[in-house]
Length: 226
Image (cartoon, rainbow, N blue to C red; front, side, top):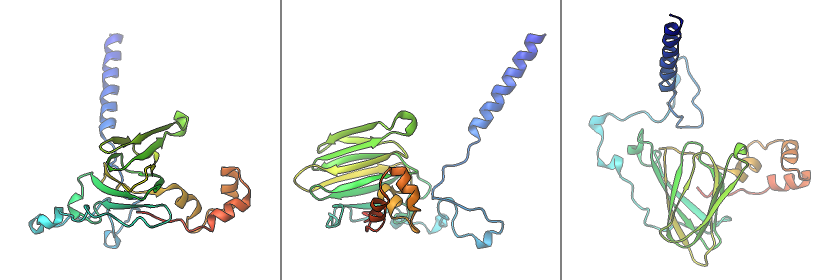
């Protein structure tokens, strides 16, 4: 009899656990979405408001111009052209987006992270040195590779990654991302170019450098190539 009670209890716990496992929150599609008691004051929802399906047309699913090279004459020597829900409304709720990345010789897409997306990159022209760094728990291991035309590399969601043109000519890559709004956090820009600035004492301690170094870095212009 005790065995029966134990079996029933175990099955009940497993059933409850299964219910909890399937009752998860949807992934966020923006940096934050503060709850409001009165919806008349609402501006955004988690994603975008939907257009009346009867008013939808082919233009809502169309974007043109990715065949055109972008200007890479900037401090980092790269230019990212994103195609996401902000400029292709038909992507709303579909969980995908795209980007073209142009590189000048020695151009860099600086270390950054996409908080809401995994990225898969394919090189169309040129030679890129790419890599990502794992989380603290994994020992911050670097996975890197030199990619040539036709090569593909994957950057797992949320991990810091980069791409550097190590060739002597321009390079072009396309990236697919697993979110309609993957977000971008460029590490240097966020840490040293935040508004307002992070207290220098925090950065001096974190980077183990003299406060003059932090002061110098915070005074630089941190270019956004997106």
